[in-house]
Image 1: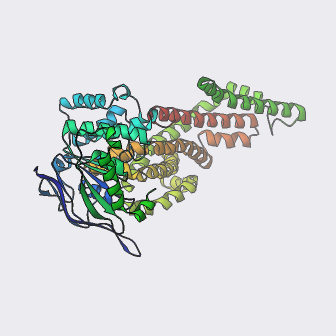
Image 2: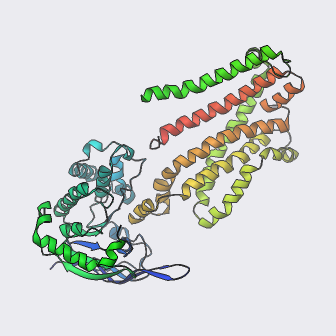
Image 3: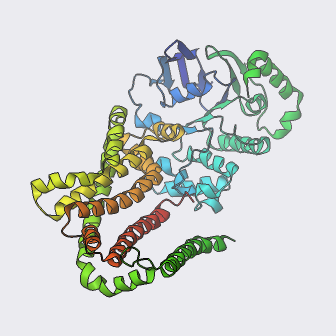
Amino acid sequence: MKASKIRTENLNKVFHTRHQDIYAVKDANIDIREGEFVSLIGPSGCGKSTIIRMIDDIIKPTSGSIYIDGKEITSYKRIPKEINQKMGFIFQLPNLFPWLTVRENVGIACRIYKIRDEGTQRYIDELLEMAGLTEYQNAYPAEISGGVMQRIGVIRAMVHKPEILLMDEPFGALDAMTREKLDMEILDIWKKLGTTVIFITHNVEEAVLLSDRVYVMGTNPGRITREITLDLERPRSLDLLTERKFQDYCAELTECIGHVDLRKVK
Amino acid sequence: MKGNKKWLNIVSPVILLIVILVCWELYVAVSGIDARILPAPHVILSKLGERFMRDLSGDFLYTIQVILIGYCISIPSGILLAALCSQSKLVTKAITPVLILMVVIPMLTLVPILQLWYGYVMKVRIIVVICQAVPIICLNTLRGFTKVETAKRELFRSMGAGRFKTFVKLIFPNALPQVFVGLKLGCIFSTIAAMSADLAASNEGLGSRISVYSGMLMTDMAYGTIIVVALIGIVLFMIVAYIEKKVVIWIK
């Protein structure tokens, strides 16, 4: 069994409002091994985005610990660059900078991390090629479509060769067909690069299609309610969607999320 | 189609201007109104052409200097002030109403006081321009600096970018459209401020010329001077708008 890559211990995030304290995340314990593809699934407001934002040091946990490669990171005010650089974050919306070209958008992390070695430009070329974006590289975000923009958002998170990819419903805003296509591309990339992935979604089928393991989350307070290991073969393809085993897992997950919670999902 | 529209953008206001001038011309001819009250446009223009170099060029250069020096000092000052204030939410909240107050106060009211300190020098008018332009530039820029999408901030945070990097690579470029709103208003405010300072200080400058000409019942030249002032403002505005178009390419 491979070593633990990301681990959290009794992770809590409380938002204080005037009237009450809201537990966005309560006592979350997750453990993700190197190279694993793990999904966090749950209805809106269950704290799934909050968990990966705490892992990536975008927000600070109220209490509890996070370990990356066995190193505790919650005690830092800002986590050290070498740990930060191990992670890449993919946002729900493309979140591109309109004043930069596609290529410059992809390379923004290199500018922030000051990675200037020779291989960088070649690696950007490679990533653009892989995502089929070479022809768009000198265009500005305003000139391209939503699906293409999201691809840019995805490869942007990889340009500094992170070992961990944190994806916050990356394709939630896209139509089903484009999403399935990009899901497959993500699996491709994951296989090629061997990164550890935490994937956030509220789509049951997407979670089953992609993951080795799924954490199911519930609301009020945001917490992990179940953990399901998926015994499905790899490499996976969209043919899986029609298989019995796949559908059973989907049914099981849907059951776990619960009918009451499901109705809250938009 | 697109080319056609661009063409219309220029032609339609020109046609409107011509229509207004023709109506004005006709009204003057038909009503027989005294030229000392309302001269015909062609008289204004020919008088202006005839006397500009001799009578107005000195005041023209004087006022242009006041506007340009004042405006050029105001740009970096306004932006820098906004950059500093935007670092703290409390300071932003505190300074915003003060800036609005300064935008609203006509700064020509400073002229008599400043002349008391400095005497009749150009510096007084430049200070008036700066006092009028800096607040409007700062106010708009500050609005740009404080409105950044959460997701973009989070992206920079996720890359561990510090305060300075976040400002240079995210907050400033993100605010550029707002900065240019400030700069365009700033050049208009500079022109107005220089004009009002001229009127209040009254010995040199295009503004004081207008009041002198009116006093001497040389109405045609008073109007002519107003046209010159308007042209200065329009040309300045167009230059800034042109630069904006080259810089802020992502907003069409």
